View 1 (cartoon, chains in turn purple, blue):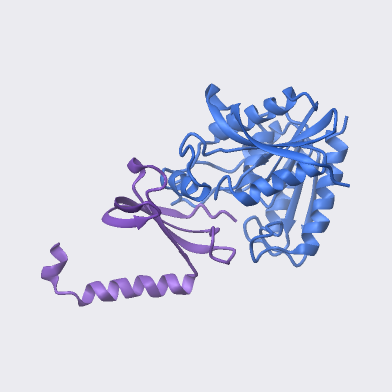
View 2 (cartoon, rainbow over the protein chains, first blue to last red):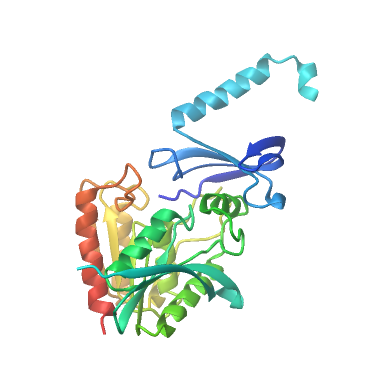
Length: 88
Length: 247
């Protein structure tokens, strides 16, 4: 089904989409029908800047196992970084 | 037997008088035929749904697919448009009804129309089909495994809509429901619940629940595709629209 399960958060980032790099302001995280990944449903992340139009978007679709591994790896990476570096 | 067809992008008048994009598929060499509005799912005005629209034309129906994200992302690829709309909380039900209503009116004005128009949708388009049939004067409706017809979406969903149960007494036409026995959203029990409520309101409802199929058994581009079930279910669609959309 179209799950509608979506979380949207503001982010401070840059992303590279179809038209090159752009400042990203929003991320949508959801579990729904993928466009390209060959599965009925997938964990999907859209990184967006709606003020620059719909094509200012970088997207990833992956299975649930990969998504959990990615999330855990991100947290592990951040935990390993000296606190001083996390301040930008 | 299939017929030749022509498929083009057109502008139609949608909700609030806005002009929106739509994909029109017209059978050639026919006169006074029924029309079908195809309602796309949450992932958008995509190639798979355009293919379904052409399928109706090949079967001799005027068919149109309104782009429900036309205002939000004009000219964008369907996946980019869907992502933008999702990030902004989706499309309000009233706008969907207005846009589908515009598509219905467009088909009824078509020179080859017999003035009968049905609606059909898959997945979330199935819910929007029931929504449309409860708010518009149409002649037949087919809900293909639409979730959240009889249940509210998750409480933490950013989408602002509810179950359609309170408006089912407004259903304007016969409704056909096609469901997979293994589907969890909607469950077969929710399909039965839909049938019970419609019976209480003396509405015409037919349904089929297919064993060995879950959600999206019609979707030829997904692993959920079940060819034997899809062939059988397409037969039910042709029979149903044949009964209610013929001259």
